[in-house]
Length: 251
Image (cartoon, rainbow, N blue to C red; front, side, top):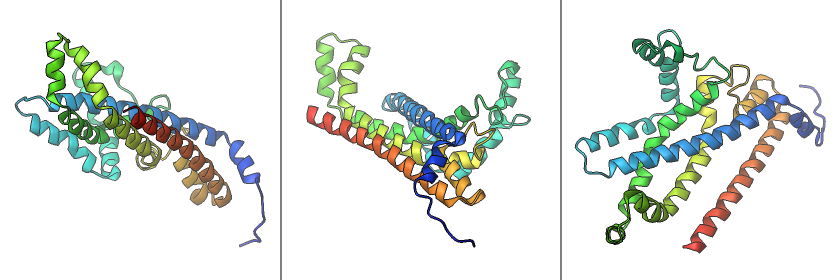
């Protein structure tokens, strides 16, 4: 091992001049934007369905939650098979219904690969968020809905004026958990399914740090990227904390 040299802030200069870092940061932000939005929207929709007294609801609740209990390794391998362009379940289904024009290389097309990976993360976690919203919905006093009925409120008006305000703390918690998962769990699903490819189209900061440190043995640059990522997540966390504090004061 050669003599180690002090580089000062030059590692940060190398990081900010690295186009792959900026691409991975952009992918991380897109992941952190799309994943929480769809997890929460689908989780809320599922929860609204699951709290209804519908026959077979319990079975579908279990089926929706089961993927969350699987590791990302299991989920990633499963969806690699589903996305396989030749014999995968998704493209085979599209051929069956004569929708060949929709057939894609779901993990090999740089234009859609990241969204395909995000969809897997959403599928895995939406059942967990549905459980959170179910707990929030079941805690809403029925007297509020009865009062809204007396006032002649429609179903949409009750949802906007009663359900959403009463779910405020649950929504904030669900978003916070989804954001945390988006910054941390993206490494697992990306590393298993695409390893950042094709052409870095699914590269996120964590996989870029891993590759820089262990594939190219550049620990200094990897550490600098880690510091930048921590600072970035800290800003997000501060904004989220201020939002939660403001909501608590409002309540």
